[in-house]
Image (tube, rainbow, N blue to C red; front, side, top):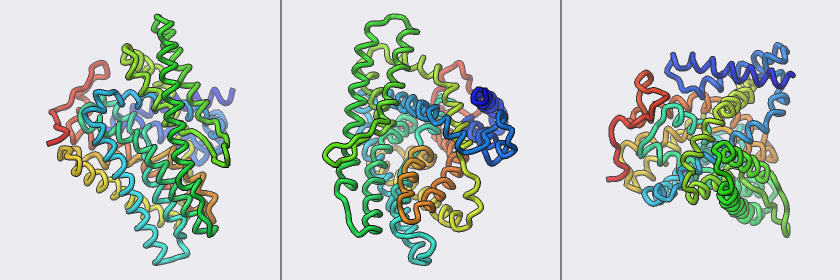
Length: 429
């Protein structure tokens, strides 16, 4: 009963808060996050009125399966952007921008935090600095996708953004594995080639292979059904299957093998959408089914935000340096790589800002980083940055897409009509 009441308050409260957010010209995702923050263990939850909020962090963690499933559907939806026609027109640009902006962000955050270490070695170690630099590369696809959906954004910037966000997960995984391996070596005095190079590549290859197989099987199974409702049910079942299988871990010849949930589900969506001739209609129906799930995902994400990190001045100092350097890295890295690939001036100016949101993937990396000597500091800094980026990032993404002419301002669009860009924006030239 308590869980059902908490989910009910989360869903209804988030939707009611979104009406207030609309009056303030804020994206709905920001309203959902604030609702979660209010229902979390540091606001209403602290009153110990269990059905009205989450009294402990553990009570939020018990509902983690909802967040995992939501991420699976988000990745499956983003996979729809990797259609062959899209890849032919901007695939090379997306890969180049996705890699270069992530590497530039990591390098800039590394430099800033190592400089902070040199000024005061007691604040942060070199191993933690380079680990945070790798975590900085990660971008949250969920908040970006929700803003694009809410305002029906469309245009060259939006299409490139969704491709880059998808690629960012694989790049971030490699950067983090390599940086964390080096950080561990600095503390232990030995370096493991398996941890730094082999395991991240194995994880990416296994994830893409599993996703491709699932996408092909989904297509084969869908052919036996003609009812829209049954096809929708099969699609939902396959996404749940891929989410479950992506949690499997095993070891082969001393090599730890696992899967990336985002990569597996993304690849499933990519393969299915490229070989199924009715995938567009089906994806639209899946999007409608997942709307309440995404509201719960962001409310629960807000409830997970830890306000206690604001009480530690060391974390705040490192966090401010991290946020400033990461923001600069994303903006400058995106601007430079877009210029290199001859994207339009509009894309160069606005892409980096839309890549600022950060959440689940970064928190997962921070959890692994707790193995370091001062891994607690790393996790606290990431928690602080997620608190800032999740509350501010969606609004900045919306503002950038409006400035690029790819969504209309509030009051000039209708949820029942497809939004059109205000003016055409050339991708290159």
